[in-house]
View 1 (cartoon, rainbow, N blue to C red):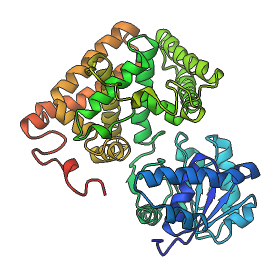
View 2 (view 1 turned 30 degrees about the horizontal axis):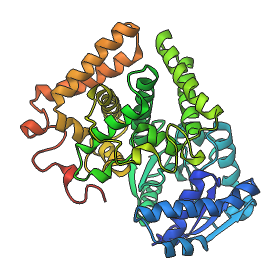
View 3 (view 1 turned 120 degrees about the vertical axis):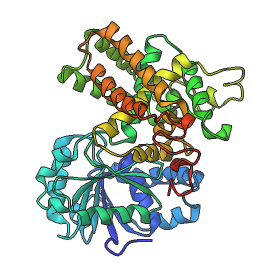
View 4 (view 1 turned 180 degrees about the horizontal axis):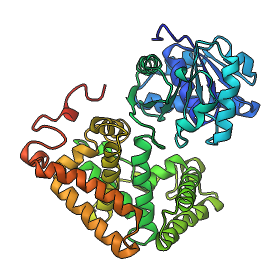
Length: 438
């Protein structure tokens, strides 16, 4: 049900995110203006929204009737003046290019009513790099959706008023979504930071011949199923997930991360060669047209991928040489998000549980494994990295900050589930209680 402050929402950009976000908002009962410069994008937007609708129905987020009703509330236009007219909220989802985002917000601020809140759905660009072009910074923030899940990241800019964040929180909740409010800005927010660690570590393991994509997916699925009650709850491994996202999208993100690390001087020559090999491997798939699920072929062939066959896990046991590096990469990033003041422990676990596993998040996993064991494994990883890349490897500092945080807990006797206290209290941890996921 719409909140009092917002009746009409202007969505800028009719791509993947704009189509999903605008559909969810229209389903809720808000009037929606969907704007794009491209008539072709607008022409295709209803079909894309219907496809998203099927995913939302499958997840029991909505019904077919609600989808049809919501679509009637969406006005599609290439006219920016018409799109902004009487809008109470703007959600921008244009391409991840800083200049384009700045130009878009500068343009629409002049067209929107003075009371309107402006938000960016950026996933990789820092909010502070965009907000300087906005005159009314008090009514500007980041509101980042994760399709097709309920998770929404909220982030205040340096001038954003508390009232703006409160309105956005109630807007998100009105859509049956769950907000996580970050304390500080972070490219990738919480989930994408962890998701990036999952995918990049998996690709490195594959490129270095530590395991095939099938073996890595099997190890991950078996590891995650060890934390859940039903075998049906974990169906995709890292490479299945990449096929779902699109290998071109994964390639662009990985290549962008490589170039950024090069610019910042964060890559040892050998590590650089590995990452270049990962990018080249993805490029090979793209050049063949194997873009993943949308092209019927990626790491797997569709519509009947190998990982969905009854025999994919038959007779297979978890290969911890493959699952442990992936898990530890996620755990390290989780710790750093808290150490660096981006968010709280519960925010990390909630973000992961909303998008991947409803039973447990990274800090719950650390409690389950034993905080002393996690610290030991991360220290062993540091020894390996120093031997491979030398003492100046930037990852060593990150690992040291993570293990220092864990060691402080160990010194207080907080070892996790095995002695009743870690990040949570046992035998009744907060993440397992009704209401932890709203």
